[in-house]
Length: 368
Image (cartoon, rainbow, N blue to C red; front, side, top):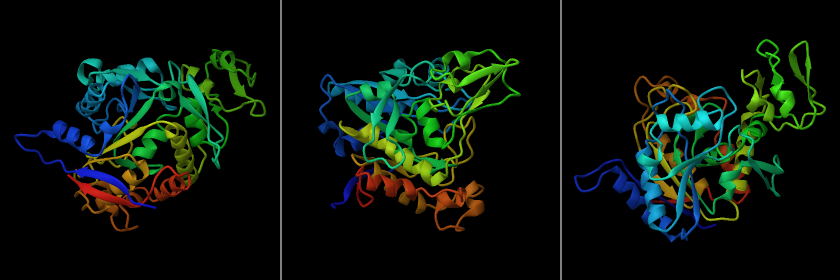
């Protein structure tokens, strides 16, 4: 198989070209303008950052991408799906407020923000994965699947479950609805904390399978009836309902790859990763530690697999920042991500993605 092309530029600027202009040159050189955007809806998948976290991508980068889409005749929108956990992005209202707080408004980015899986994370499209080993029908935020063109704009950083978060993680996990995220994280069914439950009955009213009962103002789930849709998680006002979160990290990575296949297949797609502020943990945290390596640069490709491998290789070539989490553990595993998170193996997602024909792990790096 021919090597995939991955385009790269560093973070150095001149008085004639700032970082936004450099990003524009990168994605144009990489061929994003070859996509037919005319009168097409273009989903730009991005992580808006959990409130309190300052490592997420600045909205200025999103504006650069959105502006190019508009120049090419397209209708861009920034998007992400709601989260399973407690935080500032669990429902669409809080999610939008968090996005605006972190600077992602129509005024700063030039396009609207749409939370793809709706108010409570239940507005999903069921997408068959015919060659999936773990997922037969992915549950994807409906607005993502309604788009004609898909673009991922990724902050490349470490991740405590998958090793790193890049294009595949941003697409697969990020585009899953609440039920989809639970399917990836869990092999089991949700559970209810009896201590937290206030007996309001919201979970029971929203269960389509009569799996939830209330006894003495405490809810419980009959797992023989539960189908794992996750609606109870979304409607609980006190976060008493939790996903099982009992899947192994390798299987989680493979499920994410299969969800990525569901999102990308059948339409044009393009991928951009910024290897900057490489924090050891996901932007889902409400805090961020110091970066584990210096800023590397910006990467772009039509191939999300090659893009992730190129970014991982670039990070592994860097020297650990003194005082970082990585510096305390470097060279234990000869891989920066495994040094930071020893229980993870990011290659499992890459290998499974190649098996699904999502892309190529062999790449040609073209520096501009």
